Length: 204
Image 1 (cartoon, rainbow, N blue to C red):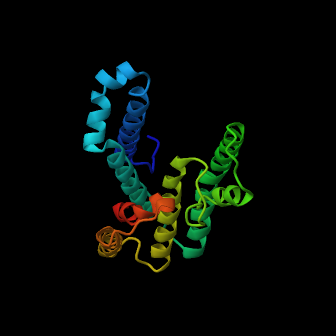
Image 2: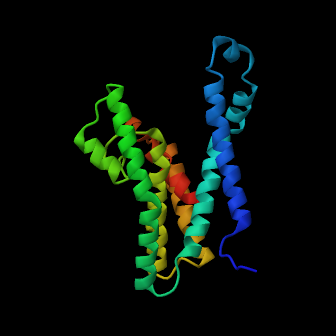
Image 3: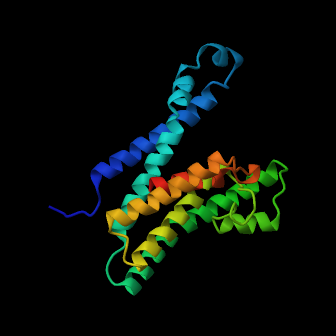
């Protein structure tokens, strides 16, 4: 038998997470097909909204990412760091840059002008942190993913990435920060994704 380092049950959970998000977005499009549909056929959307299937899917996906991330970085620190960041770079950025360029041209065709600063910030995959809008709203998940990588790598470098207690403390820290920010009514309309960022980081 051919050995595999993949966790099939994790792949199955990742598929479920994706389907939950697709369910919400497809039902949103469906109910807006016509006034008649919106008036009488909203059950799938209403139920998805009621259980917040999109948020469940996103949190599940981030939890999976955190688990897989810490399993993938191990061994000699120098060698592991080089391998880790090289793989992450080529896994994310080439396809992402193609997406950004396509999004740029689509926005131009729609007469929605994009500044050079906005384009450059989006190319880094961290537009909101650089105080720029996202070319496509879906990019916010990738920004969170990059921060996951940075936190996971830092934990590995200090030798804490495989200690459950340390991981629990980090998770509680981000969750506590999120709760305090909500109680204090912290918000920024230009950085909607950043408001929930600590919550998503705590799920990983």
